[in-house]
Image 1: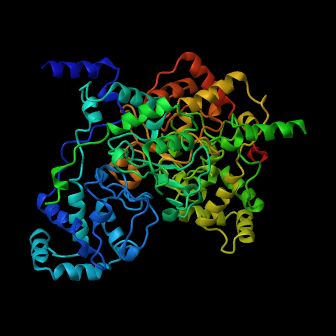
Image 2: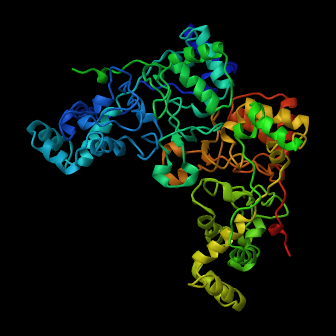
Image 3: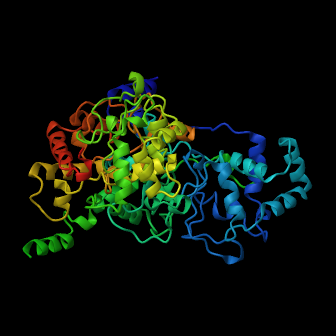
Length: 308
Length: 308
């Protein structure tokens, strides 16, 4: 009751109030079809989705490791190195588009990309469907859940349904937003103040603390980047070096950082963003505080992430 | 010589240097086909482009009045009121997309929108082409400049070619960026410092001080908006209330402000942006200074804007 009153006061006090904050808590659940999600989970961990049966979605999106693989670039079939840093799969359902260049509109559209990429899983959709159809248990599950059985579209759908379950609620910062003023340290509170004050929040906001707009990598200085970002999607000059602003949820677990993994640590990432995107110098104390804040964005891993 | 050395020093000093600034000067010229632009100019001012011969492009994009009409919403044929604030045509060639919701990829794609909108100029493309073809002088010019003569596509092309000439170089702020440290007042310099320091520049940057990305109207609080912005283009929930960040070039001349013209003055616009987009309070002195800075973005009207 006291807690509720406190929350109510906070809501109306106008200070650090949830209603006026630009960051919103992750919900406890997202509606999913549990049976399709279970099928998607099996697919997510199945290396048979790759051409040579060595790579699964989970190879690069390690659910015990922040939802990515901790490498600058991932390795696909035949030891081929990718060209872009694997983003975390956690909370990706809340991103406004998928991939660094936003070329997929949702998780379902994203799912077949890595499977068919010749440097990632390298499998053709025809062969994939044949493979899955030949596994009786898979075939029966698909036929139960989808009127048209095993199709590439249904494989993508099941994978997407599973990925929707990969959300991480109850991060200390979310509990703070919801009124638990002791959920984060004084230093993290100072970091959040700086995160707003310095302007980080102008791009990193919403439920995913990012993932809801595009911006140019390098507003204040040209950056060397091998990837041209959205230019690859649209072919427009103005889209060169434009990327989806990444989510900062669980960012403490997803080093290295940037689309090309150029920053090994959170501190490096803070310094680089500050310089390239905000045109600002940050003191070591300010960096410390912002780092402390970012660490409060680590949520609870969902039960669905456990490998059984 | 001294000026050049000074510029060189400024460039290397790292303080207020052009190379590291996120705002770039407007160039003196943009390549255009002068003959097509001249034809486009005639079309731009021609009320025959509207169904009832009362409205021209220039009716809502008054070149002597900042390139818009100074009204909250413009009036189209038959006294119909529009639903969105007419943006300035000046420097629109530098915007990454056209219209508030970015639905046109360039000026040419934009040009036919208002002509065919039933509440703006209300003309069908077929009738328009017939009308223009029946005017001998127009027909001859089109036939000289375009192998296929008068077509809707060529009308759009000529209009776009003219609009490319509507750029406003040599604003005091651009001269300041190029090394003339006395081009703007001390107050405007303080305003520019605040514009960066408060975070305005994170969205309003590049050559047009805006016009190069989309963002949500209302990051820090929900705003009442009759227009859903890019949602009308994409139909995606995440695009509700997302608009192209407008250019601030010549902003002192283009009141009222926002996509719905809700702010009558620059001060109101600064306060609203500060509150909705930055979650900040600004003092009256800070607002004064930012206003002074914004006024330095008024450039020189190009010779092509003169009505002869």
